Length: 479
Image (cartoon, rainbow, N blue to C red; front, side):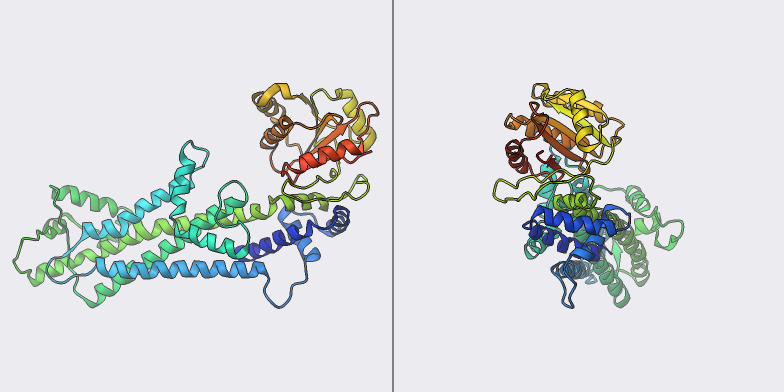
């Protein structure tokens, strides 16, 4: 399912980007018609249903999205094989026994399990929220050396999109979890290789294990550490638990030259079940858990990748049934500055429609009378704000205003004859952070002399807000 959704997401996003060149009214008419035929469902179901009707007919050859999904599968397999080969090579060296000295369990587990556990801790740091002070830079530095990041960058170059290797909220959120999944497949392959190398060497050679350290470690402490590692399986697999006698008899010094008897060699070989279980439980199991968790979060992020894309949000607005006349077609212009904002979407009811007056442009009574007369929607909760309130005042007032409310849209009345200023753009940023991504914001640049919207005023506001880059920010059509 995830691969299919990834393929369709790539196809839809690329197609919508090209489709934006067509006229707004043409897209509106097409999408309204399709939206009326779609059954009720969540946003993802409606977008996919729309794609089956509006998108190009699927040919026998794979689409660009199919190729990206296939390359993602190839990348997963490649990373797993690289990890497997690395595990086989390192495991063969770590388990190597030439008959001179036993395999040092402390060094073996330190290299094969201890170092990967440290990497798990680093991975958990990578998963912590980036809003923690100083953590964002640390998280980026950890990701920069991750092979999954390199794989994602390669897939991004092929797809021509920023899907796999970014950071942020919606779209880069998918890249964050995909990076985790890629890296865990590499680690899973590595531990399978280590276990395979250990099992083969145990089966075809007479391995002897022991422990040695320059540090002044007493036998009881070492046995206590091994007993702690055995806690997950000691009740159901006692054969893989080392006792104090084995630990005491397994310490060796490299200066010793006495030959080891057959009985001693057999006793030293009894370590292998404990060693392999430690690798499986403390090495492989955490990676499998992270893989399952990352795959689950990746599926959720993949839905957001599609449903929170600005072009898709605008599409969802167009799929809703119309309640007002949008007027003549508004020609969209593209450039480095952005695009002209389209006419506002329909306002369905007062229950989910808030009213905000900016810089005392109109009175509450006038604003509600205008909405009632123009759209037959008197509006719901009312708020008045202005540039003088400042960013702290905006945040506090908006937080109190929106508490306990789930507004679907907010109508903002502003002075149409005054050119929009940067303070208004800053206010829109604060408003979007407070109201959420799903709500629609409609700006009404009203002229109080005739209680209407002048075409020239609307054009100025549309061009200004078009550079804001908010797909659910609209300007009411001129009257």
